[in-house]
Length: 483
Ligand SMILES: *Cc1c(COP(=O)(O)O)cnc(C)c1O
Image (tube, rainbow, N blue to C red):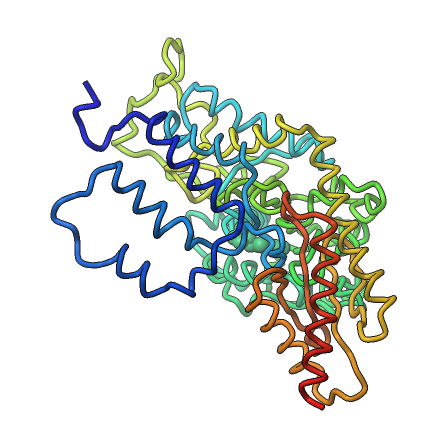
């Protein structure tokens, strides 16, 4: 019956050709999208088509013009973004949710896996057993939800329900200059303003100095300011630095302030026994986030916020009663998956309609287990250390920041080069042009460095070696061109 409708074609037939095109992309033999930009823009573009082309031709068109002109990010040699190519089972689990569970609610297996996968991650990453989670689209929203919970809690202590009444006093968030800028955005969206974010002094590794934090708090306690949260990092985006969580947790307890940890990238690092100690105190925090679409290899669009008490999330984010929900679910005498919403994630954050992300995370863990994920984390941390070792061995390379996790910040140096920042920028531009090894760059104390971040499941030790070699070759070439 449905086959009569053009837009409801048989998936297994459609998928066969489609999957072939995707696999072809994953061989990474195609030229970069920009090399044929006019061609694919004109093929894909134009005015609104009055007549459709049908699924078969559409798949052919996607195979010819869309898929081959995707992003460099899934490439194993691409180490620039912390987001990476999704692992295959993540893609398939995500597809299954798109087909059979377009919402995360209801008494379905998908709703069940939403909670179970959050519990699995909490257990794997040694969070307090009391921590409960909610998924969202990624670290941006996950941080927003956590800071929203902190704001709710801080004002409730003063007898104010800020979600009802709105902001009545100015607020502050305490973090380091290395924090992700989504913290500033969360402050802006939540009505505190970007200027509420206070940068605490850091040590040479970019980690918050607990003593400086305590001094700032002591000073602010005398003012009419609501201290909403201390935001610590478990893996900064820039260098992978991990703030001294235990010492910060002591201070948070001393001043009775909410402690949030941004572990969007770095939380899975706790699985590496060599650095596990750096995470001491993670079990004491009030909220923490992690992005499964980073180190866990989920397709992009999955972040998670954990809090000690989900009721705070409910008070901060509940939509309240609505006519269109009245009587939708009986929530007792459940005889059908539609009789209950299941766990009301839609009132724990800022999204109502949302994909079933739990099934994806569940699949990622189910496929290779905690051990498989642990091996990947250690392998990537090894690669960053290998880059550092190779750089230490080479007279023209300098390690500017030793790796904590899977990021290594290094640069090319030579006494004949006057402007090292410009020189390393040129090396980076050439690497991007060659498109074999694509790291990013960042500034560390004003020094421009090459910054590979190893998170891709397809990335191997050889990619790390190739990257270092290409930096050396490119640097030498630039030197000989200059002389
Ligand atoms: C990537 C990142 C974010 C933002 O996450 P998105 O998923 O890109 O929204 C926040 N914090 C840290 C530390 C990150 O690395």
